[in-house]
Image (cartoon, rainbow, N blue to C red; front, side, top):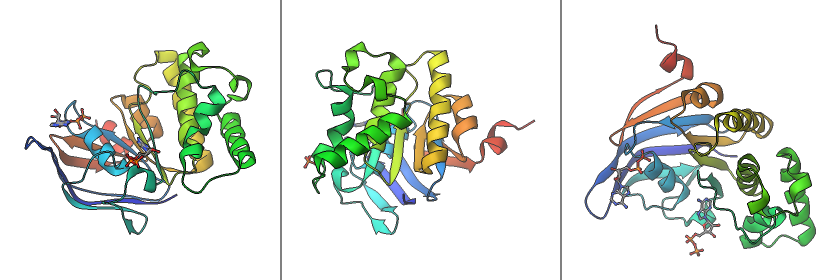
Amino acid sequence: MASITLNNIEKTYPDGYKAVKDVNLDIADGEFVILVGPSGSGKSTLLRMIVGLEDITAGELRIGDEVVNDLAPKDRNLAMVFQNYALYPHLSVFENIAFPLRLAKGKLSESDIRSRVNDAAEMLELTEHLDRKPGNLSGGQRQRVAMGRAIVRNADAFLFDEPLSNLDAKLRGQMRTEIARMQRRMGTTTVYVTHDQTEAMTLGDRVAVLKKGVLQQVASPRELYDQP
Ligand code: ADP
Ligand code: ADP
């Protein structure tokens, strides 16, 4: 686990568009921060800069004590879960979850991989489905496989980009409970983008509001949503 610190972070795209402007945010080790804001406000850009999929134009990004601006994604030890969870259709659930471990630099033994995948599967109630292919799973099960792939790596932090937005209301409720439980158990630093106020209220320690690339407000869900 680790803290994430954004100091004066900016993003200007090659076409000159300034998508993120002078963002300052300290995310404590183990904290769950929700990122909200209108479409186009720069939420995805910010997440992608944190995970390393997008260059940072200006400012300093730290994970723990380390400045990571110039580190490749694979050297940052962060795990990102996207809304279109991009599983490999030809691989079993087991191999989908094991995938990032097989890519990792310091090679794990097969028995270490097996034990990590089994632990993640148990936590996400996927043990019975390890031999199946993603195509034969429900939407909620597929989403849990995507989360399994994120948690199996013992990442320093999780980054979620609207992970539940493609699910129906019932599944969304179940997954919300699942994520809250996982966070309590693992205490992982999390940044979570959503449009859903219920998710923000139930999951977030703090909510950060982004508008036109500017961080407008950072407050507890209570302060933000319980106003008279
Ligand atoms: P959000 O996730 O809040 O919807 P994004 O981070 O996706 O916002 O986008 C923020 C702004 O940056 C938008 O105006 C978008 O059009 C623009 N943008 C995103 N990607 C690029 C790109 N590759 N080149 C130029 N502009 C981009
Ligand atoms: P290379 O080209 O040497 O593989 P990259 O900088 O392109 O290095 O990073 C690719 C690696 O980064 C992938 O192997 C993957 O493990 C990791 N990665 C890419 N996207 C993400 C993400 N969204 N979340 C976590 N890790 C990612």
